[in-house]
Image: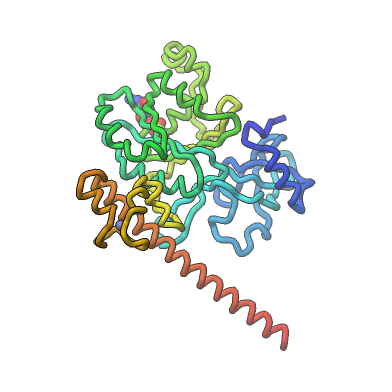
Length: 351
Ligand code: GDP
Ligand code: ZN
């Protein structure tokens, strides 16, 4: 039997299940989504599941189950099933769907921590890290900056200078798959039953880190095991893996960059740690662009606030504004459309 608590199942989820009309059926967590097929891990093992029509009806893409969701399903045959219900979602990592104005896409749910992985070569880019960070914080997920390939030549002092302004929001780890100690430190940071998502460009070492975190024996006897290649992961690629029966690691190969899907642009000042300034502006509704008495501009002018951080703030805010107003309008449109449908239905009923 598989113990689902290692996958994050707990009393609270169990209670939520009791509120479902389908509480007598099996439950499990979505580990992979292939179009309309969902792989679900349950106490009795993996099941290939599909959704009932009801689960799909009237739903936007982002409301359909994604990796990490907890679902209730009716098993059949040996390892198949039909998903009939989904427990209320929490801590979902979204991104704006590319090529759209206001559609969002759920990448994973029930996420506790997100490792923003960058490598300490040309890939390191603090502006991109900020972008990931604000999206992650928006969902009350804990962001962690993992700077990998620390075995390469890099200027640590310079890097620390770059990350200083967001260090309160996001712990920073320097790692290398060739330095087992750094992997151990990262592993200790993941608690039992926690779900960790890895985001970042391809090539920065996300899969290598996931593999290294999963191989305790390799770490303890690093040189021998690594050099013989024993215990290395096979080539079948799982996106969600269990780390030594303790944490759940989710690798997201496609997530190079996030388009922001943020509803509350005002939260950005806090996330980027400039709210101390914004609160001192003369006008309550100051937009920090050219208003008199703007404490943010003052801070930039006298060198307390890095102009690059200020620029980044304006850019992200503009994007978030764009997303939230477009989404707002879209909702309004959807609402008036369903009103129209209701009216047509009523009219039909009266005929
Ligand atoms: P992903 O695309 O982010 O999953 O990156 P991979 O895990 O596939 O790694 C990309 C390349 O970087 C591979 O050749 C790895 O061997 C290499 N790599 C990963 N981690 C490290 C590291 O800590 N140091 C060095 N020097 N190379 C690494
Ligand atoms: Zn201002």
